[in-house]
Length: 561
Image (cartoon, rainbow, N blue to C red):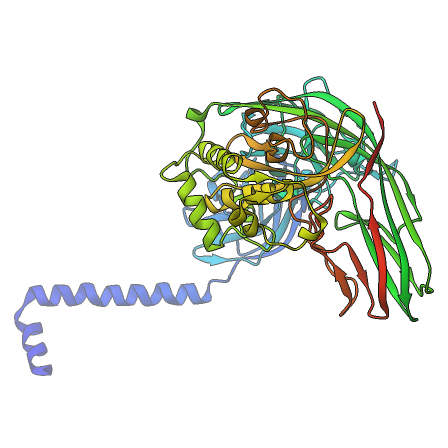
């Protein structure tokens, strides 16, 4: 091996030339490697100022920054700022103007492949503004949006300041053009705010930071203004235009109701110690029901608003004790009429995937995955792909194939599949069957429970439903009143009208299934009631209360305005 190398080296000039080049390369590489070893890593000792406004000049102090070249730059977050663009760059200091796109970022200096330590920069506009003289935080301010028009369910971005680093119960409200919220409106005014409020239940809040929000246009929104309400007050109005490609939804015939809700507990058999929890449903805020205020609660509740209820607790009850709870509300309710262009309805579109996942799911109330429900749904919709027309087919099937019957308290706990098989159903069965069949067909739907009011202000327990259309929102359906349950509403062509429309004589006490957490370990729970709310817990007692009688009265309307 060595003799061959010696012979080539002596006799071949070309070989000697390549060996010279190789030797020089090795020496050069070794020298570069040695230089890189002894060359010191850049070090940042100080940044002035650490809090900046975009467009402001920043100076970095430290050592081993070198001189400007193609191999020296500053990194701010994911942005690179070349040394040639800096106003000053020397071995111990760098001065540069902060790029417009920077906010809260980590900064480092890079010199010939070596990176400095990291330093944190914060945009003062990203921090909640603080008014030192008044010792209060400033109100939120909307400065811009990524779009001036969008449809229901579409995510839009709002930019500005003082939104808060986390939502913490803050609200985004869409109002009509003639509805301007006063800057003094607070979060505590939430139930009485007029407008379409972004709802966590509909997964409308996608992202929240102090300078940027991403929210879905909520059901019930109209062209007008957007407001942000935080615990520091209400923002300026920001103009918005609603796109109505699929159809229209009109709210009219506003009614203001004064409503009373009551329960009586008697014939208590108990030993001490004991505890009794009662959960009284609170009317929810929806697109058609708002401006809700509690006028009185007697006795004072343990918790005024707990999991969609007022929570009442009674302890160490004596045998023979009677309990009476009375709650009084004011609320506004609207008539809703929709017009849909079926040809404009999107097929297989799911902008709001969390909503689709939640409201096509199967559960004990709505057994959408049951084999009987699945087969029946498929036989109804067949090859139809349009979700609006699918829902209409399911609605029509129930009207034509299920005979209406008046509700019976003994039906409590009875599965709704029994109603499908017997072809007999009350309004409760009809609303849940509609939801189960539409969910099985991939259409989001929710049942609603509450009361309906006749012309004499008599009230009746009632259940209806809503289904969701992409780009449009929720559409009401009332199979009960379409079948004259619990009474003839007097609506012309009611079987067609109650698909997509609902009058102002409904008051909801639950929308969807209200799932509560037990308060007592191994306690006794009353659930499954066919009453004016759909919920998992109504009453809860310790085992030391062995018997009692509860009378939940149908909520009454005592005044209409």
